Length: 226
Image (tube, rainbow, N blue to C red):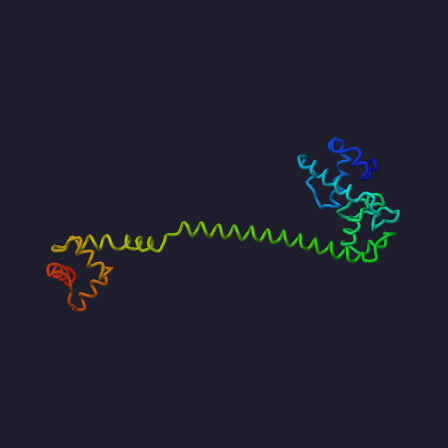
C-alpha cells in the first residue's frame, strides 16, 4: 500500500481521492482524526468533507506544531497507524485524551498539555450528553404525541354523558311514553327528576307524593306501584 501524507491529499485533489480507493481510505483516516467519524459510503458528501479538510490544512499551514511524535509507528484504536508524518496536534490531543500513557511517545509537547486534554474530554462529554439529550427529547416527543392522539380519540365529558344516557334512557323513556296520560315532554320531565327507572320505583315505593300532572301521577302509580 502506498504511503501518503496530507500534502498528497491537497496535491492530488478531490477527483484523485474519488478514483483511488487507497488514497480515499487515507483521506478518511486523516479526516476522522480531526473532525470525527464521517460517512465513507456517502459519495455525495465527499466534496464537502474534502473542502472542510483543505480549509483546516490551509488554516494551520506555517504553524509550528505543538506536538511532535517520536520517530515511531503506533497503532491506535480509532486512528489506525500513526507516525510522525500524519500525527497532527488534533490527533495527538485525541490520543492523549484516550490515555495519557501516549505522552511517552512524543518528543515535543507543551507544558500545559493536560489543559488541552481536559478541554478535549469536556468537549467529547458535551457531545455525548447532547446526543443523549436528543434521544431523550425524541423519545419524550413520541410519548407526548401518542398521548395527544389518545386524548383526541377519547370522548369528551359531554359525549360520555350522552353515551351513558343512550345506554339507559331510551328504553326507560319509551316505557314512560307508552303509559296512558304521559306524553314525551312529561316523560322528559320525569327523567330529569328520576334519571333511572330504579330511582323512580324506589321513590314510589316509599309512598311519597309525585309532583307531576294528575294523569301522569296516576299512570306512574298504577304501573310502578302495583
